[in-house]
Length: 404
Image (cartoon, rainbow, N blue to C red; front, side):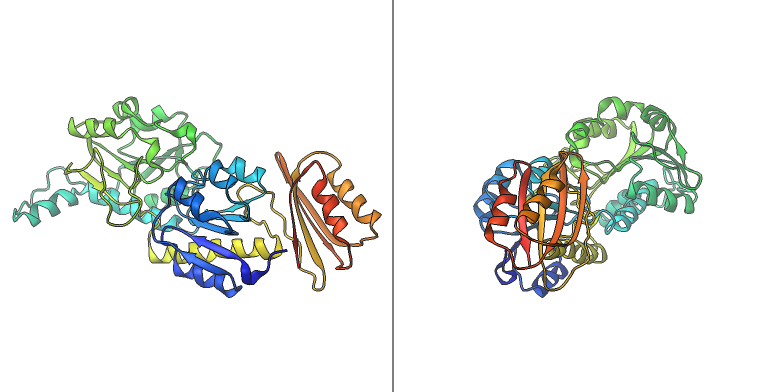
């Protein structure tokens, strides 16, 4: 059983102060670090940490998890979780939470603003004005009304972008490998080739799973319409930046906006290196799609609350890797939370152990997801240590925690 006053929390990458405040409300000891940590640095710092908070730069690898004997849960204070070894986290009984909705609006607004800026050639006009050149020509500047937006990845961000783009007068096409309901008048493309060949603007909103690495390169840029625009606000690894530079330099693409990169600086003020630097028709932003004060505040409170509820109550609602289980709290009882391999008969074995020791079950809920099951059992406080020893010794047990 963990004493709340001794719970250690490590937050990396300048996570919003609202997260710090929320976790301190429960008496946790919170350390906040402004930058990301590499694998060796995180291994050095992770010992004795119960809750870990990261954003997109810090990688939580199998080696990190193997060094994190006290770790109970990880909070990804962002949308993606591909920076976390979810397989190893599940095998260690470590719950992972993220913020799948909190920064959606911020990313969508950035995409819309960049589409308008590129279509009107605002970045080039701005550069000329700062150089003292007055160029009032309308050449190459267009309205976005009537143009077709192609969205690759029709998830939370893609769907909201679809709706807002239509409200601004754009037509929308989308492509997704999963079956997705088309909102409003959006057209679902049968293939990505169809989308690339028919759209004036192509924007990527896919996740960073390994299978997506480098999937958008020279072949895909060549299929895009001459004079079209390209945006990537998803993950840096999905795009071949050398191929993008060539497509821009040749004039095949009229412009691009990129917010994510294959290799990103660890901290604020570090040098940024990219093949796309210096191109006049490219908007480069430092991974700020979700970096608005509103979004970061929402994310901070949302993920911190999930971490605290899991540690204190065992609540796994919206966990990325463990089954979702919520059991109403009952005062005066001990709560046993049991992560286990999902095989037949686990519930019966747990209850058999409790029955053999005359332990009455006051409340119980089980859910499974794929390879793992998650069981919450509320029992009275009058039981021996032998009960917990036998539950931990079950061959299916991954992790057992007792909550007061």
